[in-house]
Length: 82
Image (tube, rainbow, N blue to C red; front, side, top):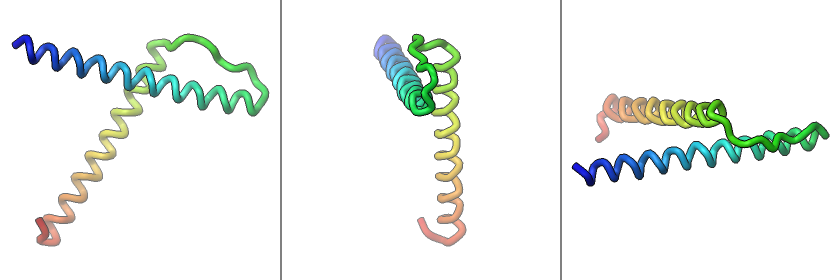
């Protein structure tokens, strides 16, 4: 039981890290665009809204990947391939 909890905690930490890194990358890109337009760069800390946006981005990406994978397996089944 304790081993399962440890795995869940490590997964949770890894996901949070993924979302935070995604926010930092998105923020970096946004700041580059602002700098090119000679506008004020945003140096604020990460907020929950940005983390939620990063999470939604990864969820959408996973959904597209799974949908495409499902279509691929359907196509293989229809053509008689394994």
